[in-house]
Amino acid sequence: MKNLKTLAVLGLTAVVSLGLVACGSSTQAASDTTDATTAAASAETDQVYRTLDEIKESGEINIGVFSDKSPFGYVDEKGDYQGYDVYFANRLAEDLGVKANFVSTEAANRIEYLQTGKVDVILANFTVTDERKEEVDFALPYMNVSLGVVSPADKVVTNLDDLTADDPLIVISGTTAETYLIENYPNLTLQKYDTYANAKNALENGNGVAWVNDNTEVLAFASENEGYQVGIATLGSKDTIAPAVTKGNQTLLDGINEEIKSLGEEQFFHKDYEETLVTTYGADYVNELVVEGGVTE
Image (tube, rainbow, N blue to C red; front, side):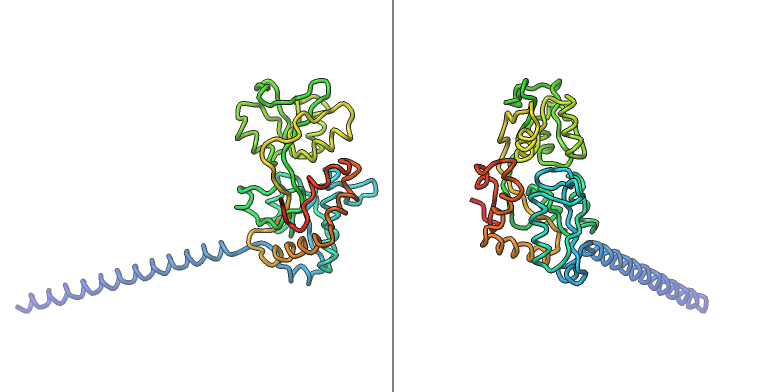
């Protein structure tokens, strides 16, 4: 009987011990899960951007612009940034009471520069698309745009359906032209370049039968370079150009939207066009390209 009692006590002790171990493991697992969830939530909310107040306090706003895309963003012979986007950027900085610090960007790294905090805003002929809206926040538009095709005047491309895989098209990586051609003309050959300067050189050197890009850009190229013609002035849908900020940077987004609305009341972007684009496109295109106050027709 004594032995039976001893065995019963030992068994009960073992059960309690196992219960405590199991309980401890469950508690630790729950703790680990909570820590992991908290870390994940923290990572999701850890945005790399400066709010509007932080920008004003610093006295400087970092603006990503093109340095080789005349007449929208380029560096002149004096080393100063010029162009339609730059003209707007300078006014934006002025009205915010800060200095504009221009950061040269390329089409393919515009989103990256925002996500890494290298710039506060992108003003680099940035076309608004649904795909890009998933990665950045767009402000109100200030320009209309569609795609266009420029080619040598002695062999003008007027219809992409006439081309084959042996007729390479020049595009710039990270642009809407690249996306459009991949989706709508998957059998055509694309010659991809990282910069506008390289794309222009490729066309001039005969490395492609045509260059597909924003119609504003190809029209500008044809007007400034003898021997080239825009055979397709409008390709695909009509889109808009707008400033972009890091996803979630609501205060800066609101500030830019208010600025665009205010500038629209004074017809600022028509003046911008007259100062930077009229020599390239003439007066006939102003109402087709310019968007005032963020309101498109």
